[in-house]
Amino acid sequence: GEIALWSLVVLAIERYVVVCKPMSNFRFGENHAIMGVAFSWIMALACAAPPLFGWSRYIPEGMQCSCGIDYYTLKPEVNNESFVIYMFVVHFMIPLLIIFFCYGNLVCTVKEAAAQQQESATTQKAEKEVTRMVIIMVISFLICWVPYASVAFYIFTNQGSDFGPIFMTIPAFFAKSSAIYNPVIYIVMNKQ
Image 1: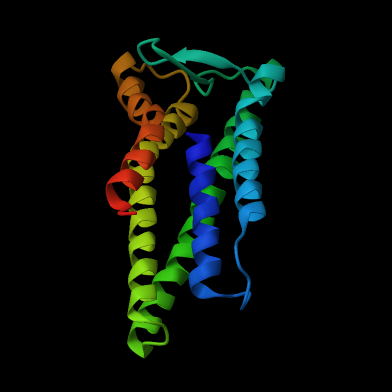
Image 2 (image 1 turned 45 degrees about the vertical axis):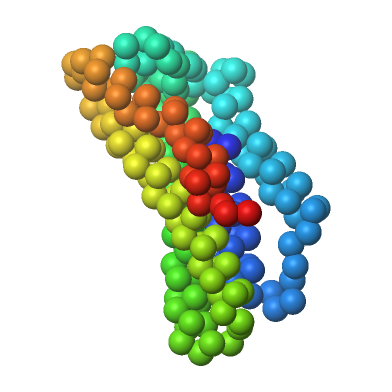
C-alpha cells in the first residue's frame, strides 16, 4: 500500500511538472524514473521498518488474518502514540496534500490550455487521458485507504473501547488489497 501511495505521489509530481511546466523545458528521463521508484521504496521502508526496530510494533488486526501497526494499545515502551502520529502525518496526510496540490493545479492548467489551444489536439488528448487515468488511481486509493485510516484513527483516539473483529477487518481488506487496483486500472485505460 505504501509503495502504491508514494508511486501516486511521484506520478502526481511528474504530471504536474510535465503538464503545468513550472520548470519550462525540463524533460523526464530514465534517471528520473529510477529516482522516482527508489523514492517510493525508501518512503515505504520508512513506514514498514521502524516497528521491526522497536518503534511501535506489528500485531494481528481484525479477524487475525493480517497484521498492522499497533494503534489499539498505549505501549510507552514501544512509543506507539508517536509512531501512529508519524504514520498519519507523514504517510497519509502529506502525500495526499501533495497529490491534491499537483492535481488541483493540473486540472486548472489543462482547462486553460484547452481554452487557448496552445498545443496540438493530439498532445492535449494524450495529456488528458494520462491525467484521467492517474486521477482514477488516486480516487481508488482514497476509496481503499480512507476507511482504513479513519477506523485506525477512531480506534487510536478511543483506546479501551470494545471493537468487534469485523470493524477493522473490512477496511483492512480493502486497504491491503489496494496494490492490485493500480495495475488493473493502468492496463484497462492504457491503449498502447
